[in-house]
Image 1 (cartoon, one colour):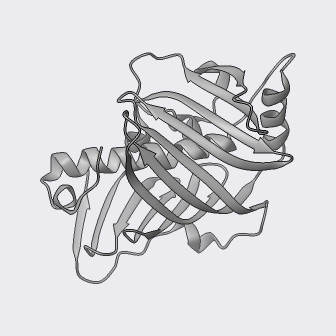
Image 2 (cartoon, rainbow, N blue to C red):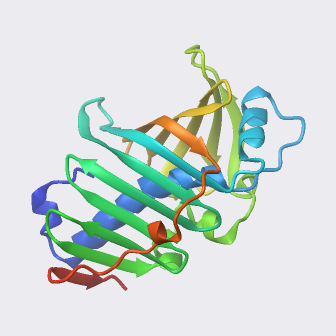
Amino acid sequence: MLMTRKSLLAPQGRRRARLGWMLTTALITTLLALNVTVMAAPSGETRLKDYLKGLNTLTSEFRQYTLSADGGRMIESEGTFYLQRPGRFRWEYRAPMEQIIVADGDRVWLHDIELDQVSHQSQSKALDGTPAQLLASNEPIERHFEISTWDPGDGREWVELQPKDPDGQVKRIRIGFIGEALDTLLMEDSFGQITRFSFLDTKRNPKLDPKLFKLDRPIGGDFLEIQ
């Protein structure tokens, strides 16, 4: 889905689709905070299991690229990501459009700074039908995904997650590590679009201000509740 200013100003149905798309891409990364049980795991799965062990909070700078099915670049953005288990995260997009996405454990909030517009939705509904619903339920990943290794020969250790539900929005997720560090996440959706997250200056288990996971309603502007 190509985000344009026209789509930002579209009717509520399109706003719902846009919010759902953004949540899907953003929330996929929060799968990294879930529990994984892997028996006799190959190296990539072992890396994922080791990385998740004892993970409570996470911060990282990120760069996000989305490619169309034919390989053309559609969206490029960057910002800062904060995660606190269970069920809380914050994405601050700085470019090309300033936006903040916050999950407070009850609702998911999207603040479009350029448009001075806030959309919000029940967290359970926002996550419904996406792999990120696992964040709220804290279910093991392997209950919903086939877990395997992937080796494109780029020097990273990769683990691939393929949804067991063939009708979901996400076709596959690939998580790449360099040494002990989370480096890259690739998500391919049902339309053939590929979203790539590159993580920079990642900090594991830092102390985070609880206020990061609250979004105060700005004075003025539009305030939209999505049912």
